[in-house]
Image (cartoon, rainbow, N blue to C red; front, side, top):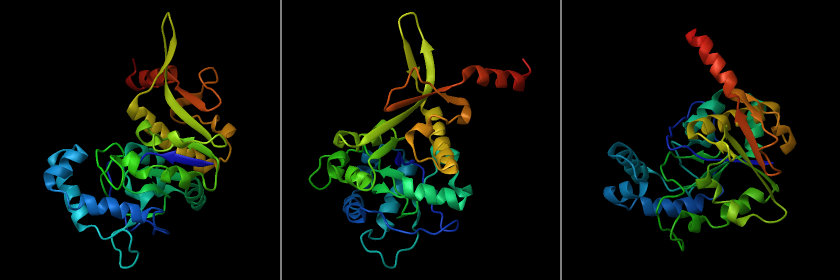
Length: 271
């Protein structure tokens, strides 16, 4: 089973925790993007990244100072991918306190999808960057990054495994889903709340809470060494529970126990 997750926008260099063990599978392609990005003017880069001045300045310097990614000698400042991302999902995953067994599990099973690197193993060496998959950057024969990466990410993902657990956002799962073949099982986890009305029942997903749950699930999967889709239904982190009635074979819906959440808040406030 391969687990896919999205990257985070916020990144740091962490050269002290643990060492990287490998390089990205698509270092050559990442260097193609790097060579384009480092030649952009400040205003051009800011427009592509759609960010404020502070973030644009940081990444303008990053791309200008970044060493070639397709040369593996004399590289400094590279850190393991899983420790470089700092978003909410990664905070709840808490890889810095992983046991050796958890690290072995994620290195084998977890893959981070990236607009810049394509696909990453947790211990792949990376430089911090900023480039979302949906960024309007033409590269190679592609008018955008989805076209640039094409089937590469998918092929790398399924070369050793035919079961994919999707914990990525739609922006990143779009780099995989269009290429799915009949013999590949693609299972998506949805984290939300059930909303009832007179006419129907729908699942409301809140972005921040979904990110928290995805990170928590990865940590739980690594802790329990889960290798089968059926076992994932046992996840109960952050007061979520598996909802059989809202799920299907390839969509696993986990609902927030809102009553428990309300009770805990009531106890905290004393009201």
